[in-house]
Image (cartoon, rainbow, N blue to C red; front, side, top):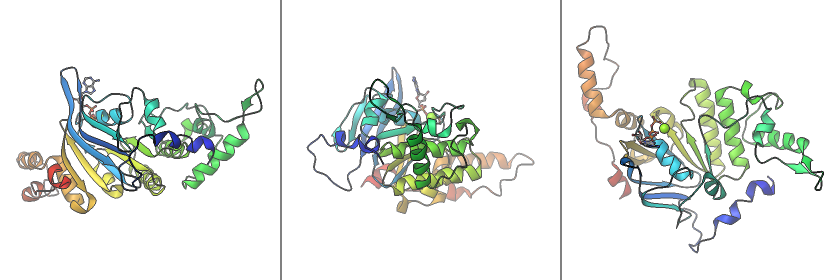
Length: 304
Ligand SMILES: Nc1ncnc2c1ncn2[C@@H]1O[C@H](COP(=O)(O)OP(=O)(O)OP(=O)(O)O)[C@@H](O)[C@H]1O
Ligand SMILES: [Mg+2]
């Protein structure tokens, strides 16, 4: 990795809090966000630690995007606290978040489809060579570095000259993850990276989420899908109507409980009852009513 990749780290340790291996990189304490009269998020607490995947689950409108917009510097919280490395912060722009090593991969990836893969890898942070005024792009070095970095993450592409638009959605997500790792991210935020992908491509993206975690990054993985979350997650937070309904460590919750929680156990039980009255709908496969309402750790219990 070049200076380019680690340059952001120095800026981070400006507070006087002593170094602590287990200290969360990012932490929200009772944080919330109101858009005018609309309270999109309220009383949310979340910790993101190095080498851990923190999954944020929730239905449409639950507040997932609002939460990551706060952490990624797009919006500011209006309640509670937001800390990075133990010190309170308030970002004005995504650049502030990036300077602290917080990188976000959005679903509509900011790539230029017709440009080669290596060019997209360095988009906005191109390597140059030669003295001013004859400084020019260092194409060979960029190609070599992109190739090495993708391989380091276990991503093998046949040809880095191919336009990034010709890659599959999953492959593009993987390139974006490798890019964030290379440019020194400590926290990687992924907003529903598997939402538009099939089973196989989702598996590939999950593999690189795990690879980023193994490299020491703290990952915030936003998803609707409890199965995807459970494959890589260390911690699970479920948002519902803007509040945190569940916060549980992996050891505190089974996949079945997480799935039921996501579905809203009581609502699904009622739906099962309704569906059973409709001819031609087979409800055999749905879980039993008693399992749907099984208690699981709540946000309060998990914190204690
Ligand atoms: N800019 C905004 N102005 C006003 N209300 C907003 C704004 N952004 C989000 N909201 C509201 O905040 C709530 C949470 O929205 P958010 O986009 O965070 O949900 P989400 O969990 O990401 O949903 P989805 O799964 O559909 O992406 C919603 O009720 C939404 O209408
Ligand atoms: Mg969203």
